[in-house]
Length: 445
Image 1 (cartoon, rainbow, N blue to C red):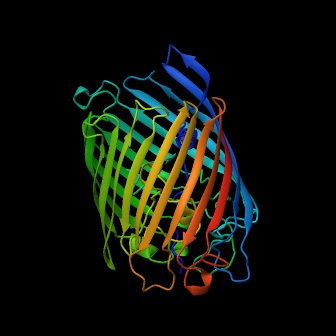
Image 2 (image 1 turned 90 degrees about the horizontal axis):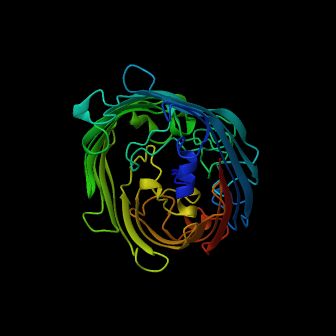
Image 3 (image 1 turned 135 degrees about the vertical axis):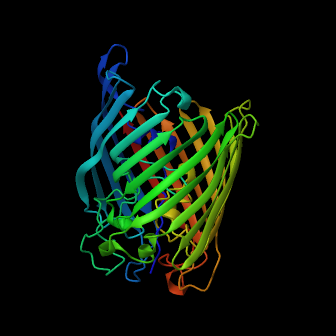
């Protein structure tokens, strides 16, 4: 059975698109921020093409695919401190998504998926100055349907969005796992039900207790509990995460998903500049304990920005490694750094049985234009499996903020697998280089 991973490209602009408080139209403001009500609207539409596909169907030759995806998210969020202590905040939003054309190159969508549903529906309370020992807003409790990111390597969001073509249990297109299209854009990030308690703010010693229940069939509707403990200073932070699997819905369980119930995951992580101005370091080492045995994953990342040089070039290197039976949980790539457009989204698994080396080069000709180039090498650790996903990939892309509300993100990628569908790989036609392209318009209001 093919193991799927997901890590759609979410540029800085896209990340802002999904943060309710970042882009909003203020409807009401009482007493200079005492009570605020905002209207949110964000949208995106993308055109995609791949000269080869990764559907695993010999009849779909030579494999050329053309498709489109779009979404619109709209709603309200607000906050008020007109209570006896602290402040109350909340949000309510809907999202409409769709896929068009041939469906994606990985065969998860067929191109006629559509869906409108509630995305965010949450309430929260912050303590303000009520507990001085914990600092400003040292207690932050929220619950409901919302986006929760634990650390980014283990739990980023619930954004995996398969369509009608996805059914790893029976292989029948019955729509059981369909989330309404827009697989690549992946805007359905909120978990179906959550309770989150954050203690200690963002500096010094702080932590959190989290309960998450996914309503995503593609994640087998997994339920987990998690805890984090961090110590943050001006030069960086060090921390740990614990995740315990509580339950899965057996009707949607496939592969090793049933092992998520009772699974324990432990990790140690860190990030910061280590006192070196313009530097950036990060790492995480995770260990999974489940019925079939222990699994491990890790990454290390180092980067530097030449801030005093024209166009402020940034160079970054990352090494990632995932053991053969590692379960990627709700991972989207640490700090949203995707792991290859074709490899991570369409061409197979990059979050199990894989070692990945990647390099990023980024320059900023202007404050509104960023040019990026990334190169990846995927080395499959064990070659005893039926399918081999070893490959190389190069992606060239840019983010151009045309206005304060509109950003254009074109990309071209080149993916070269070692194997193809005819000799143990997944790519259609041959093992020659596939050319992939996309053009996305991001809009925030």
